[in-house]
Image 1 (cartoon, helix red, strand yellow):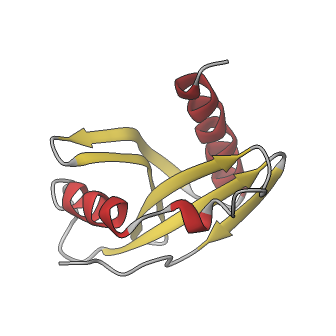
Image 2: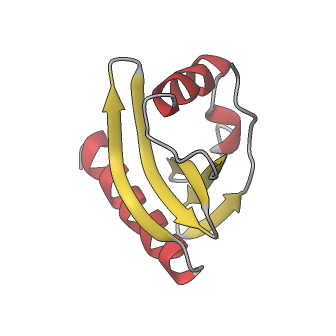
Length: 113
């Protein structure tokens, strides 16, 4: 299975996980010339930009550790182009999937601009 297919399956799992936690899926794979945001979801008037990370195992570190400062800047720049209402809060979360285990890190990083 290629990386794109694996990534898509991980995003499917993350989406199901978030739906079960009461989030509403707004969009998937939001792209600009600066990068891509895997999932954009909403809950309680908060727009959440979600990065999904998958690892078969943690032999080479956790999925959380794989997010570089360059990737965080790319996500933040991309988020600038997503229309958010004035009264809506926004947040950056990470969903880490190791095998079948899913972890959700809410407020994983601050907006970096």
